[in-house]
Amino acid sequence: MLLIHDMLAKSAQNQPDKEAIVFQERRISFSELEKTSTRIADFLQSHGVTKGMRVAVFSSKCADEVAVIFGIAKAGCILVHINPSFRDEKLHHVIEECEPAAFFFHQNKEAAVERAKQAGILPSLLICMAPRVGRKVPPPTHTLEAILKNPDRTKQSCIPVASRDEDIAAILYTSGTTASAKGITVTHGILSDATLVSAQVLGNVSTDRIISLTPFSFDGALSQLFTAILVGGTLVLQDSHFPKDILKTLIDEKITGVHAMPSFWLMMLERYPSLTDHEFPNLRYVSLIGEVFPQDKLAKLKRTFHTSDFFMMYGTTEAFRSTCLAPADFDEKMPSVGQPLPGVEITIVDEHGRPCPAGDVGEIVHKGVFVSPGYWKRDDNETFREGGVYTGDLGMLDEDGYLYFVGRKDSMIKRMGFQVYPEEVEACLQGINGIATAVVVCMPDVGGGYQLRAFLVREQDSDVTLETVQKHCKRNLPHYMMPDSMTFRSSMPQTGTCKIDRAQLKMEASL
Amino acid sequence: MEIRSVIAGYIEEVSNERGFDHSANLFECGLLTSLDVLSLVAFIEEKFSLEISGDDVDMESFGTIDGLVTMIDANVNAK
Image (tube, each protein chain N blue to C red):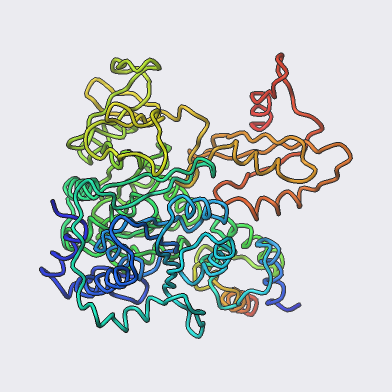
């Protein structure tokens, strides 16, 4: 089997000078990426970081990350790419659970890294990437620049550590609640299979120029990276999330493939209406993932990219990739998320685990290839059962075997691609001095996403202000968990059994 | 009223942090998120009686305090 770093080695041999990675003004060729990732593997090995140890990366999009990702694979280590929007609490949880032997970070994260260091949870091997001009990094922290400039003379070239299909290549942390933020283990075999299948389904070729919009802590971002490397195409890393900048990249870099959440396109259409005035002759395909896309907005997007093929994908990180709706079926079968990918078997089961007939809604179960061996350091016999993944997503299959995504079994919603549990937002609000009760309800908004509406009751004699509450949220919640509105009440409405009447609050929120 | 101190004050307010580098990227440092942009635009429009179009909102103008000051300056002078 061709492992991810073998894919890089092969492309570096076939087309050494071709652009592999583009980041702002930087152009990194396949041979440079091959060389620098080997140096990073050398560095890790010479510092006692060996096969199976975890190596963490905490960074916003930057050019150096890619070489680090491949360096970690070459050294036989396990990549833990930590979502750059994680605040201290989640960051510390991930570090404590994974116990990385080395920690790579972007210099912009130095304040958070310093706090983690104070907490005594970081390894001694710290490496700063992308240092800002004129800024010194205090030892013993290493800089990637120095590692690449002064290779370890005693060890000329790392011999990639033999990894097998079943060896864990990465641990991907979900954005779920802090206590339950789980590390999903992904094997080399899954990465390799998923890369081959994605490239085949999307028809990727060496002339492709793919834009990378999300952090590499997402499975979709890794999948795109490896697909581009496999076919010898170019991956263009997008750091700015301003619509105007993204449009400029799409046009100037002659992007041929985009993979994004519907919420990304809704944001683009809403905040940058002139997107629809442009022509995108190079854009070969648009692939969408995961969420419900309002039909009128989708139609608008299809008119804008009228020369592009549209794909709709579905998957959970626990099962990497599940289904794909191909361009040929797109118009006829929307809003279906498509048919199972090669090697995947999708069934719909009722609450007793019995298969549902076509047309009935039940839990989506994924079996076959791409099934993760499980969560890092924890057992979950609910999700991983009988060799499959019980996704917790509700869906149905039609007579032709096309899957339709309906919603979640639990209260989780997705905002901007992140998992959000309203209970966790409530817990944060209730942690504020002077707040007696907090209830957060999710309201579907016109864009097909959700709004979070918070209702608050003060403790007796408390005069806590909205401003204080907002400040507290700002400090403690990542942006995707911020309530869209907050309302004080004198008491919460109650049901006959003295529980909080959430339905009543939902009704008030909809007025 | 000095543009720089008004903008720095606003960002201190929303981010709850003090004394940051005016040339550092506000988003990469975690001081602002893309969700803050809309309210920042509204704040600037009101404070300086300007109208900011989608074309003014990019990383060059909104990524740093220096960029914001330059953009506001140019817009105020063009009035």
